[in-house]
Length: 318
Image 1 (cartoon, rainbow, N blue to C red):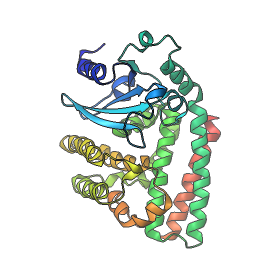
Image 2 (cartoon, rainbow, N blue to C red):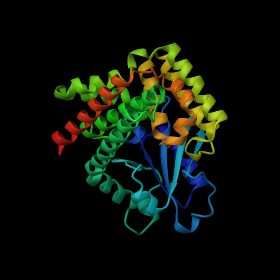
Image 3 (cartoon, one colour):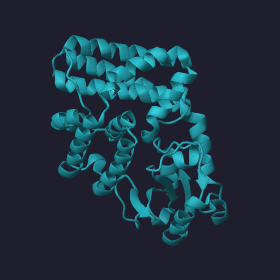
Image 4 (cartoon, helix red, strand yellow):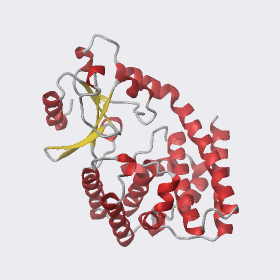
């Protein structure tokens, strides 16, 4: 095992000596990771520990270990197996879990489950997206959504389609720090869908990615983290801000502005904000996502295009 994670192994042995733990994410599953990337750790709890460990509703915490950022998820066996957001296809065993338990390897079961069900889960997301498209389209036609709010939904829906491209053609889950890399790989390896991807990227307005846009979006995002209700009921917004800030500073220093812009959009997407939250913080979210308000006819046309792209994806793949 690489010596670069020896200090992480020592940390887990000290604080969670009886638990099985694995490393997932880009540090374990892909050859691509940046200096700013965190180390994603899953700690498997024994059932008796479930009520004893204090943690956020999302069951994770962020730690610093020798300049490395650890994002640790605490899960019991049921949460590990049936949580669709835990979708690793490979992992690194950092605590010799096979030696700690005589039972079957739960992580290996989950890895096999993820591989077997990846396409099914993606198809469900695609079908849900089609329903969302229809719903938003009706709200715009009925005048329930104004142009500013509709433009926000359009950008978020465009990002959803981008994620579906990644899942279907990169055969991987979207990785917030590596979205540009994943999209470029798809375009290089699947020329027949390049035009559709370019349409989605155009709707995301990535050509506006520059230092001014990123700085403005970053300030608005951190204001949201500091002065509104916690996104996703998260109790560690100061740590989230620190982690995001580190990544955004890295991208800005490397002039990787598209990567930074996609990271911000991906962060908002991952919060699964409900309609009331989006409505209440519409103006602030528009600043974060750099929304350019569009006319009603353009909105309806672009939503229809996204619907058709999604429909074509499913028809061609399944």
